Image (cartoon, rainbow, N blue to C red; front, side):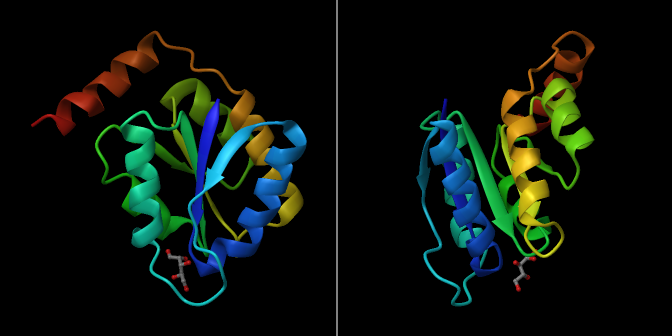
Length: 146
Ligand code: RB5
């Protein structure tokens, strides 16, 4: 599995922690920025990252901003993206099982490093259950085609 990482300035520090977690787990990733805590605009990083997942260059993405909301809004504008804003371990698991989320979004000003790492571990391990959930995702995809 190859993962694309991106953040704005609000998520920069937490994303570094997540990158180091992925190093420890031996998971392949690229971090496409931002590369410092100077103020930047989350769509400039979130949308390109989402496009890389949507076009198949990466299997999944992890995006972080201050609240996670801006990155979620931006990523979910990209066709084929199911970005899940997650701040608890239960949702991390269920969004993989039910929504087949292909991008995980977190807010660095909302949760701490240890919880974020637990969420990442759970989300990476979660498996889509298909069945009725595939039908529901299909309805969203059909709407995207309108
Ligand atoms: C940046 O200050 C902040 O607005 C951004 O990181 C994010 O929380 C937006 O939704």
